Amino acid sequence: MLNSTKNYFELFDLPMSFAIDASLLAERYRALLRSAQRIRYGIDNDVDSAGNIRAVTQVEKAYRTLTDPLSRAEYLFSLYSETSAESGDYAEIRGNRGASLMEEMELRETLAEASNRPDPATAVAEILTSLAEECAALDKELHDLFADPCPSNLRAARQIVRKLQSLSRCRRDAEERRLELGIQD
Image (cartoon, rainbow, N blue to C red; front, side, top):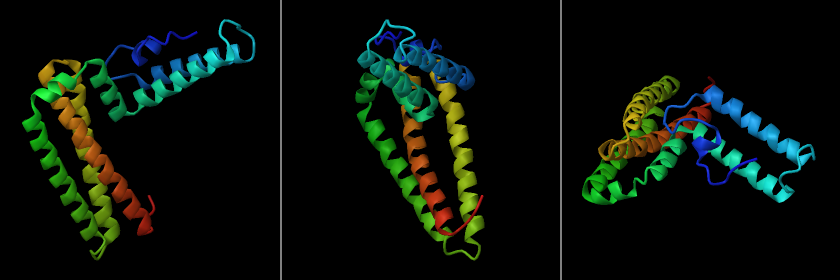
């Protein structure tokens, strides 16, 4: 059924790329699960039940990884062996992490201040809109950088992923604040 030596892209017969066809991925995911069920219910006896459980687990993990853009980016870094590029520019990376941390702290302060405004619902909605727009722009940059995965582009992509992770944490905080304020969509 499954070859455990395949990477996640090969497992779903997709090109190794940040840009993926989500509907094709979902279609192939369902097909792999149907195949696993045929084995489970004795229709196809090529794999024992323990092997079937491992196969289903691998398919589910691969699917979760490829459907989440940040997880997909991290997985691509592992496939491209990005660690060597990261260690070579430690000072630059450390400096960028500090800048990202400052930006995250500023966003959190802005969010805290939004609760004290006369119309906190509008203020929080504006913050969420701004975060969504920034994430969309960074996501486009990631697509472009992964289209040509040379070492310099992978380093730049790594920085964008860190920024997206920071923005994701801020979005979660803003969503929680929105719920605390009783703001409905």
